Length: 109
Image (cartoon, rainbow, N blue to C red; front, side):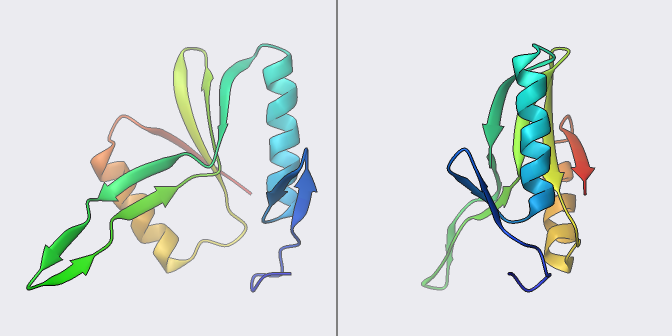
């Protein structure tokens, strides 16, 4: 159990942080099998800020890791399953939308 009371689940040998996220994965697999979506990816990463050095101190890159990415009707869809939206998530979401203005982001949960 994690700090937000989500219960992890394993489906197809893949560990999901919550049963809701696992359920969404199962739904997307059915859509993939039916040919409604294609190229389903798990946990795609978007670079928000490159790594850099400031006054001799190295700072790591900042990334946004979504839950799913797939193609539907020719459009690339990025999807995040969120039961609870933390302040860090909200900030990274704003940075994501700013850096990738053409992204289609769907929040489920």
